[in-house]
Image (cartoon, rainbow, N blue to C red):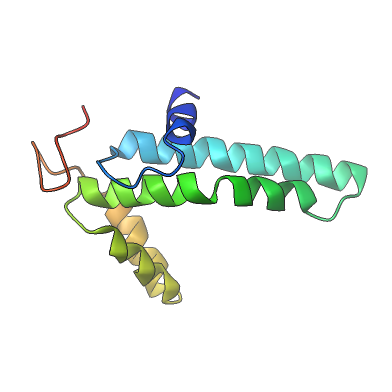
Length: 113
């Protein structure tokens, strides 16, 4: 939960670097909250309103942590646009998000250890 809240506190920060743990813990807690909201919506008969609002609120933090994750492996944030290519783009971004960090400082800043 600590990593999730840290990403939210950096609401629209696109500079710096994010380690794998920060990225994946944010992803995990985001997924858990989305599933819980979906279950609540289905139980009370809503039409994905809560999930939609939640997704809009977390759009910038999600983009920010993804850009910082790319920075951590030495890639520019513009690589996120490859996700617009069906199937292949998602696979490339998944591989990038699983890669280990560049050791030491890179052009995006010092290692976030």
